[in-house]
Length: 371
Ligand SMILES: [Fe+2]
Image (cartoon, rainbow, N blue to C red; front, side, top):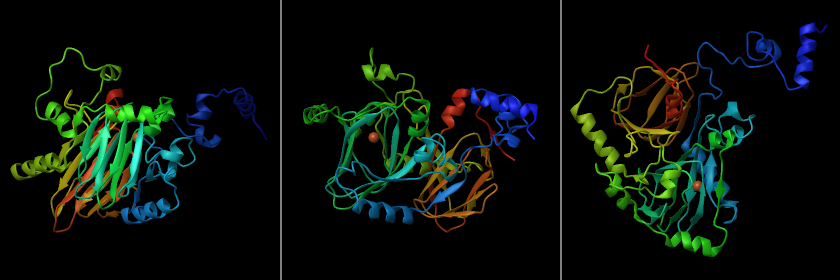
């Protein structure tokens, strides 16, 4: 029999109203709802992994069935199984905040210009010796294995492969978050003339941007360009981080000092204007874990995605079976799950990590726990 409380809840539900007790308080589970004020974070996403070999095979397979027009971007992306019934996140979320996936550009192909408010980085996994390129905000960048290239909100970008083998990268975006919050804008050139105009508006090469901003100096300017003012809090003036810079820093770090027991030898990709993370929504780092070394368990308030760049490692994550990861495999660790990483092989491992930690830091709720 329906209680007076149940009747009232039904009436309120029809009118778009609810009450604490039955919606996200102690009575929530009885009414099929999820508690909001949990003692510790209970993330929406789940621990998951995807094998590169399988994803790459499917990417090639699906590419056979896409016309060049449909294949404006030949991609395969990863959906967190716990998010699949949630609008927006269910079609694009590797975590509630982040997108993660692979993109393929075959020799002779081009992914045409467009721009959007979601930010995007790309870690180059496979590239021809020469001829792979991207153009971001008027800077043309030659792409090689291990390079990380990116664009800030609302700048034009295109990619191409004039080399003799496939170009494959791992792309990370904050698109699920931006779309979910109602901040997505997207634009493609309206005509061939528009596209030609964008193509001709060149600033230089990726190395030019690095010489100005990525080598311990920055230009003294009274006025930054208008697009910088528009997004001035976190504008990152670089367009790529060469792999050499990252590996050289890691080599020096690992040859000079004791390894941090929780993070290994790790470097973060920083914004040279403010010393902060790559984007206001995403931080990125590369971890070097020497042979036969294991990190101590840690938990953090962040949704993190790991891509094994080199070597083989084992992830031990609270509440789930161990994950053995090979090169380019992807592992997701949602907020507050305790985890550790071990390299029990005879060679070093490099692990790329991206996460939404800047958001939690901005909100003042970031936390770490070493037990
Ligand atoms: Fe894009």
